[in-house]
Amino acid sequence: MKKIGLLFGMEQTFPPALVEEINRRDEGVAAEFCKIGGITLDDLFEYDVILDRISQDVPFYRAMLKVAALNGVRVVNNPFWWTADDKFFNYAVAQKAGIPVPKTVLLPSKNHPPDTTAESFRNLMFPLNWQEIFDYVGFPSWLKPYDGGGWKHVYKVESIDEFFERYSETADIVMTLQEGIEFTEYYRCYCIGRKHVHIMPYEPRNPHHLRYKAGFAPTPEMTKTLTELCIKICNILGYDFNTIEFAVRDGIPYAIDYMNPAPDAERSSVQEENFQWVLDTTASFLIDLAKKGRQIPKEYAWSNFLNPDGGNGKSKR
Image (cartoon, rainbow, N blue to C red; front, side, top):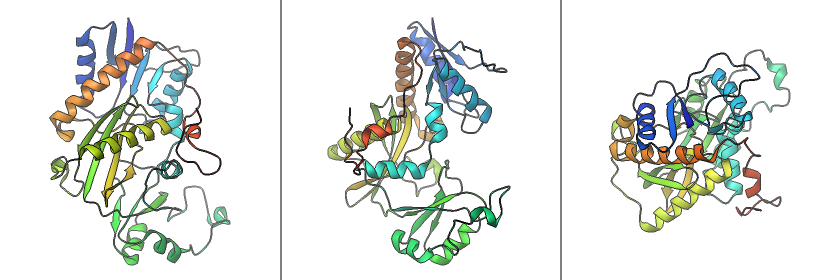
């Protein structure tokens, strides 16, 4: 009997529904909530697959998952890559792969990080070349953490004065300033197993409970484009469970946010139709993965998609 473990935190609906769905299918694969104690270097782990929904917030779990992967447990998503990843790097990789992304600038933290002083930043220009940055990005723009999530510390800024007002609130968080894409359509897409894509019209300007009530829908051509981009992005980044968000301006979908390896899947949040899709698709994917048996992770995937001369988005494989 193969075994799948779910590692999660405050979620209420998705994890228990997923365990129930996998066990209901009775395909020689059992699912349960992970039981984790103290971990030794010799632990082999009892799970064939672990779905990770919480280690981004719990360093103990992240360290444990790396050792689990070292012992062949298939961890979704790969804890080695997720640990090394950040959203600014994601934008750079996508741009090199020919995927439209907004103009984005990495900014040093407003305050010194703990245990550093001004002498720690002798290589940093002071003052920063602010006018060049503003001319490049333009207004309106978005100030947001380079590796954040959940819309924390995200600010829309309309002017230089508003930028500095918000920037002063960010303390020692490393931020990015990103071009504001004034979109006519916006889509949030699940991508599971790097091949199953579910496109959801999404209106981020609505109150949270109404964001999936959008007055637009993708054309067949847009559906094809978004599906191809989602699969391409997840193949490049090596994520098997992700959401990708696109803002459409002048018919071009710009990849806005696509480092979401523990994306929201709560029934009350994503709405019933979307919840059922992600539940059924995740169950099928994890069962198939467990049946393949254990495997130690291979090297990171993104470099295979980029050419030394700047890249055209084609894989070298």
